[in-house]
Image (cartoon, rainbow, N blue to C red; front, top):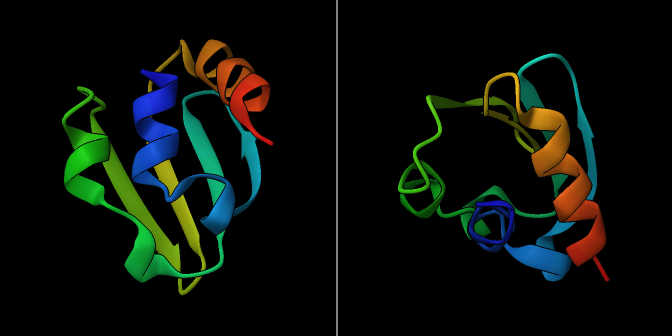
Length: 76
């Protein structure tokens, strides 16, 4: 799941930072056009919020920390 979400966000070429709260991944990207929301939604996440021109939140649920940890392993 983490790898598919990260790929949908544009991977290393597009993601500048990732953080998380209780249920969401908070992601900063270089180019929102490089984000494939369908690919992210196909992982079964409950939703996606675009909160700014370079900010997106992926609603994962209470397992968000595990997804964030796996993404950190994948990054760079």
